[in-house]
Amino acid sequence: MGYWFRIGDFELLVVSDGVIRQDAGATFGLVPRVMWEKYVPDIDEKYRLPVGLNSLFIRGGGKTVLVDTGCGDKSRSAPGAMDIEHTGTLLENLRAEGVAPEDVDLVINSHLHFDHCGGNTVVDDGKLRPAFPRARYVIQKGEWEAATHPNDRTRGTYLAENIEPLDEAGQVDLVEGDTEVVPGVRMVRAPGHTDDHVVVEVESGGDYALYIGELSQHPVQLERLAWISAFDTMPLVSLETKKRFVEKAIEKNATIVSVHHEYPGVGRVRLDDGKRKWEEISNGSAGNENGAAL
Image (cartoon, rainbow, N blue to C red; front, side, top):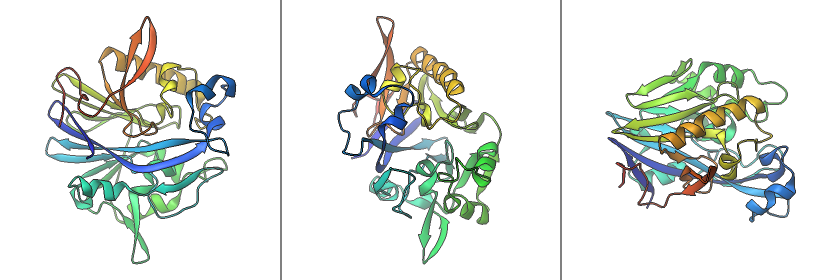
């Protein structure tokens, strides 16, 4: 059974595309290993930690929206020391919940790194095509430009196979800045990881959910805001962005969905004696005070 919950009039489902392993030192950036290792018990012999690939399916307002698409299954190779052998389950998991690819109206990519948009496309009869044949793919214009004109640092994560078939099919909608794609569902700029990275807010009936994208790759990074990943291209901007959204999440008692936390990556940040504390939410207690699990 998938992780369904309700935010006001919206039904939300967290869907996994699998798990990757990535270098723990890169995940925690400048933070010394002696400080972070107690939070990461499941490190393999290559010092890689497991990282979730949690997409968010949203149904309401007469539309269906999918946020991020994981790695997909087109390739078994990954940049650097990453391991992506256990990915590519997004479509299967959606179908298990009664959602077919043609049911999706909109796809939002928080950004276009391979582990957030690899499931945008599939190989069909030897050719690449959009995985969601009816969907409009809503992407920040600046992120699209960065992905289609990668530099020496980014070319290993901006992969043409994940985005060019969308443009060829005429299914790309480029937007600039904060954008409400459905009443109550907003793409909000959250720069730091990339310049045009976005988070997604869902707000209805007094309830508020926040899909945080790359604001955090491990729960402790929502508690210790200065713990910034080496993957963030603008770490000081990332710090200020994370601070702003974490403060808002605390104030609004947000249900947080994290793409890279262990599935389902759903929880809240609360203040405990003035200190931020991440609390996981079990399936059955998601949603805010007025929200409910399905």
